[in-house]
Image 1: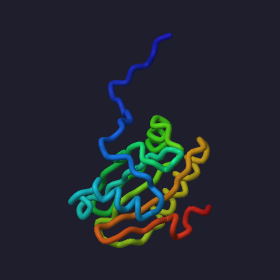
Image 2: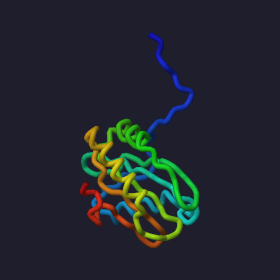
Image 3: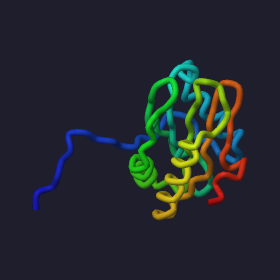
Length: 147
């Protein structure tokens, strides 16, 4: 049997960032501000934090970078990275360059889709944060992960 070899590799690599224990949405916000830098005001970018059973970070993944008002979040990539890192939980994060800390209908739909997909492989979506330089909106804190 011939084995398929891809020219492209999407491989999870542990990061050089220190291991952080995530106990709240505020912990997540503080942790992710380092990922964004100055781009937080320009491009909408999505990240995924991968966590172990103790809610300690295994690493993070930049999922996508879009334009001023949107980016694509591919559920299959989230599943791939979560499985490959042996994560038991994940946190989805994206920024709003506009500075508005309000979840759009599209934000709510992708959150539900990601949560349901992860549930099928027994991985928990702990939160989805929308971040700006001045603060954050937490789906978990607002009760929007209870579907």
